[in-house]
Amino acid sequence: MSNSHDVVVVGGGPGGYAAALYGAAAGLDVALVEKQKLGGTCLHVGCIPAKELLETASVYRTVAHADQFGITSGSPTVDMAAAQGRKQKIVDQLHKGVGMLLEGRKVTVLDGWGSLGPDRTVTVAGGESGDATLTADHVILATGSVPRTLPGFEVDGERVLTSDELLSITELPGRAAIIGGGAIGLEFASMLADLGSEVTVLEALPRILVGADNDVVKMLTRAFKKRKIEIRTGVAVSGCRTTDIGVELEIDGADPLSVDAVVVCVGRRPFTEGLGLDDAGVKVDDGGYVVVDEYCQTSAAGVYAVGDVVNTPQLAHVAFAEAIMVVKHLLGESPSPMDYANVPWAIYCHPEVAFVGHTEASAKEAGFEAVTSMHRFIGNGRAMIVGDTDGLVKVIADRCDDGTAGRILGVHMVGPWVTEQLGQGYLAVNWEATVPEVAEFIQPHPTMSELFGETVLSLTGRALH
Image 1 (tube, rainbow, N blue to C red):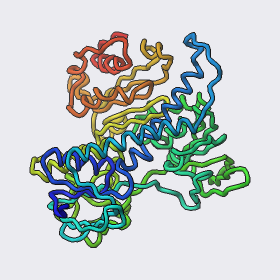
Image 2: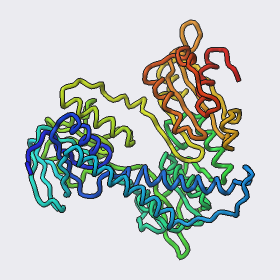
Image 3: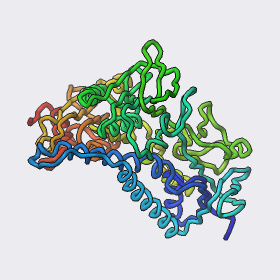
Image 4: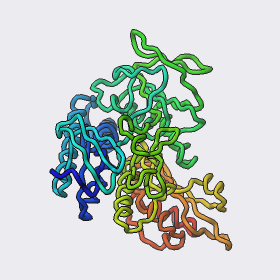
């Protein structure tokens, strides 16, 4: 086995394996170093297992309300062991698939901890591949992230959990507190509530889901309230203590909250332990993130970093895109830098949330004379058919000098299947399409997605419904 390669990738998560696959497809000799499992956080303790358990919750919700469709069934019960078994089967199948793709592209995969040294050397140790020193023309760091915790919260996997532990539970807590009202926290709150837990979301900021439009957040909050999910914003949790029956949370200025389990969802921190960044001359910022330029180049020549280890949106699809950009850049193909302000966001709670680009407030702050239109799913035929009408589509556009709506600046959605509907809004925002251009296109009927078309059409001043 050669120890010299065109590219050495350290980390086998979405950013790492995407870089390896894309680089190999371009004809590069690529080695990838991973000590744990190929697929990273996304595949094993993130996107895939979380969405699988959310689908379990969706099936439970559907069966529980089957009588509304004329289907008689008994009250459903939850078998978390069976749900976990199905989740693991999917994870294992995808994990195997990543390995087969890498093998098919002739990527050299090494099992071990990779650490970076001067002049683009990577030392591999502690794994089944044995000790090795690799050299490369380019190195891509993609070591990912781990859950952040809070002082005073000792994670034990039973009463105090992070996302890592929650995704493997086999028993549901009767009462659960979710600390953090971001995407991860809201997905877990939704899942647990659907499956029968009493859920309270505690968020230190004045609102949940920063980044989504205010009208989307209001609709989501109302929908959660109808499902008896309590959302408390502007609250600071100062500590917790385990008791004989559960966990007691100390909340500044309020009575303690007693629950059976608490899930800490306060974000993720970059994982750089043992990576040798100082010795390699790679700078990190105060938050521990690797510092990169617009092409994900670090301060060390020939060394790039992608994914959660850099301070960009912690999304698997962002890591994929960064990996592609980096490979193009090191090949000298002059790719466009990433536009992080216009990446797609998808949150799989119930109702779902999906958005891209400016909110109404951020558009005005950026100096646009924003005009908006908003339509609700309550009048959408397809939403009525599936029995899921909570939600809305909001389109934000720039006002032209003649008063008409011009360039589409943002698309924000909450409601049924909106994570699958954002594609056309994402393209509209990133291609800088205008309202008149998009309004000309036909939307299939009856679909959820035609609500986006209706919303754009109303911005022309001539709506149908």
